[in-house]
Image (cartoon, helix red, strand yellow):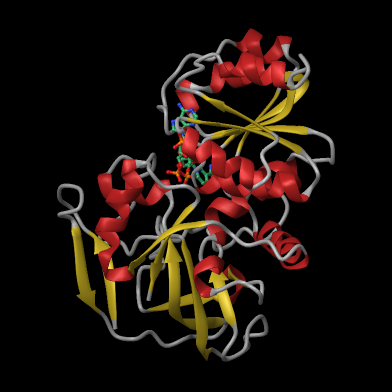
Length: 333
Ligand SMILES: NC(=O)c1ccc[n+]([C@@H]2O[C@H](COP(=O)([O-])OP(=O)(O)OC[C@H]3O[C@@H](n4cnc5c(N)ncnc54)[C@H](OP(=O)(O)O)[C@@H]3O)[C@@H](O)[C@H]2O)c1
């Protein structure tokens, strides 16, 4: 079988297509034949060597993938031959408070491989109505948005969610806000992307390039009252404005840092706003399963921007880096 690994060297030149034996499952393990995978911003960082943690190389990248179970070890109860399952981002975080454990495509080999062996603890069944491509978008971006808004944020109908951008995490957050009857205000650098956000259910939109004080615009759009939740992906560039956008006691779900990792946070901005500022480490398996039930019940479909053949991983990653996408970028096996 073939896989792609990241090795030492300059970004993109450090990728190799390699041959490895098809894995065989030990007790409690399953082997998946990959159908599809999807990209996250983190994968670009892994290949570029800018991710916040360093891991031993060579490494098979990607946390997100869906496959058919083609072999099961003794004692496996969570899957049967022929099932369609995804791996969980954190292979040992089952439920409740965060537990540090191997992460796919980080401290453990990931999904950019024709066959993948996983412990049955780290798999979930995917919603039956989704295509393989759609199901492959869920493990990181969707689970993070659900963990933020629903598991931890306790999102309620009628609340307002300010969503930064139109990438993987953001578009799932928009779809979940709509699912819950919440009001979504989406900010983006592109009017064309904002039109697509409106079609997906955004109640109001702001172009953050044309309106740099988007946090004030968001407050105005919410009748002068701050928003209840912010899906924060800009990091250093946006965090202070997000803290000014929320209502007293509102929540900032700190997920990403596409606008930089180093910034100054004024503690008084948090205190004065009685803000709940929460760092998100993706989500647990229980979050993934609860989200899947809701996606199935609501017949929700993830938004795919573009599909690449899996061996064109480098081209797909470059496309992600250009930032022209809306929603998710998928690799087909
Ligand atoms: N903590 C976690 O568990 C977790 C999980 C998933 C992702 N993340 C992080 O979350 C971030 C987004 O990940 P992703 O996979 O969704 O990335 P992505 O698909 O590449 O999307 C990035 C988005 O950032 C938006 N953006 C860029 N600069 C912005 C700014 N100044 N203000 C507001 N929005 C801005 C862009 O919006 P427009 O193109 O619309 O302008 C784009 O849609 C990354 O930093 C990633 O590492 C963290």
